Image (cartoon, rainbow, N blue to C red; front, side, top):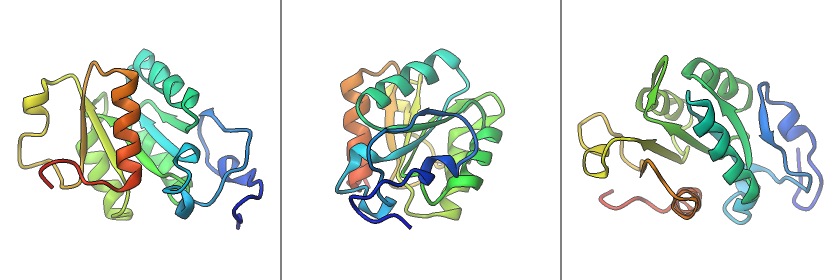
Length: 165
């Protein structure tokens, strides 16, 4: 087990799959993530390689560690091998082999406190519409700016509820 201030090199290596970036400095257990959100591990799910890559780079440059998945199947595999280390799910709504709402619902059934940001190319007014949207979900409309992305990630990691919840 990691202790605050100590290097925890096994945190990332225990998770199978590709890591866009693992921070070279100390990692702390996930229960410290609210105090040091720049050390959060984000599971990023998007079937569009260019969107996934550019979003991963933005997050990495901001100091986050990113574990990426290009499909619901890959996200399930990453989750199964590292769910205790993952601090946030950031997923596209439309994925080639499923959708982000089904994915987040399944992952939250396993860990109800998982912060989630769902993004979509749908217009902002209809993104959160419909009975399928679970409470406590942070919504982000594409295209989004770097500042919009980082602000909503910080808000979700801090445990702040989105408007209307």
